[in-house]
Image (cartoon, rainbow, N blue to C red; front, side, top):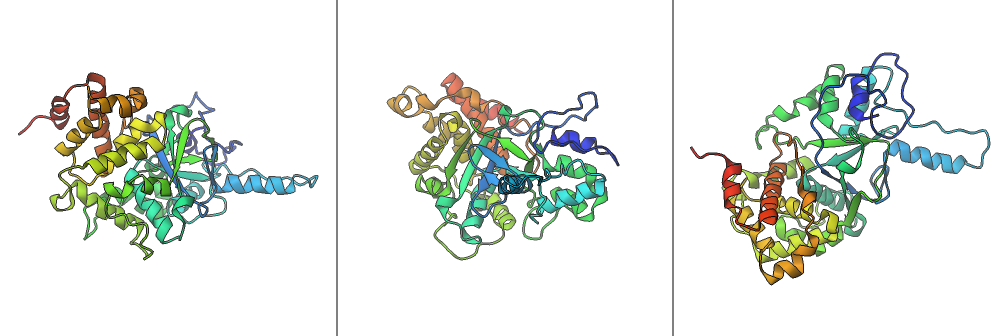
Amino acid sequence: MSLEDQFNSLDIGQTPATSSSTGPSRHPQRHQPRQEPPPRYLFRVACPASDGQTDTEWVKSKAQYQRELEVDHRDDESGIQVADPEDLLHPKDRRAAAQKLIDHLRWCSPQDDNLVSWTTSILFVVQHIMQRRKNDKQRLKDISVLVVDTTEFPPGTFTREMNLARPLRQYNRDLDYYCNLEAFVCLEYSPACYYHGEYLSQGSLHVQGKCAAVTAKDLFDAGLRTLQPDLEPDDDSASAGLATEICRMRQGYHHVGHSQTNSTNEQHAAIHNIANLFGKRFYLPMVANLLGLMPCLLRNPLLERSVEQLFPINQVLYQERVEPNLQVSTLHNMHAFVPAHLPEVTQVKHVSGLMLCRIATGESISEYSRQAQGPSH
């Protein structure tokens, strides 16, 4: 049963479902409100300090992972049974559901947490790496970035946290405050700057064959810092909070003083090298995300120039370096919906359109870029 279905079907005293993993709804006769689809690609940062399990075979919540450890430990003890993790999106009352949701969203890490967090923001990914490295003292080689193709999972497996939070906000003051985050006003940063567009799954997900994983060390070795010079993994001093750092880095999408106006061959090489680490299936989507990571104004012409330089049609470089990685279909429907106030995701959506135009036609993308920007005034 999908996360959205479970929240929408919450009734006092309703018999809970027994599955600990997400999947299609078991109640198709129940009318469900239409929800926007998740992004095609979602990321998860994991390290030894992370809750649950995250690898290229399984992603499991803290509650599910601990249950399986207990089952293994008691396997030889006859007559002892270990209960399944509570289907926490099907509790006996909405107040309990609201509390469990806000506990997860605020990283309280309760023992019975059966939710798993994902992000569509590559900016959030790189800052999360820095937080794990500096504040949690994790080694770069022990931090991994997992990307999944959400089209490989049943509908409803992933949903935006706000789709779950808003129906329950009246039952929990903290959750109500969280739902107002998109309108939060900060003296230093613009309204809503602290909203990051989280996505959630539940229980266990079998991700084998639907994902790719790369260590943070490999990302930096391949040139990640050339795309965001502020990233300094060897600086052991504690960094500012995760949200504050993301807000600061987002200024590059809105203010000239924080933006770059030209891309370099070194950056293009880094984009190609990093994208290659994720394999052929994820090469083009990662190129789009990495271009969107560069701190430049939204829809800046340098993105258009960068795409044309990365995909130099009718050149030997195109044949030898790029063509084997071109699976144009992997760029389709990357972002059917972009939550408000996520400029880095808006940038990636724009870049993926530029790339589709360039690769499909092999022509200049200036006309596409003009159409995407809309009529001039």
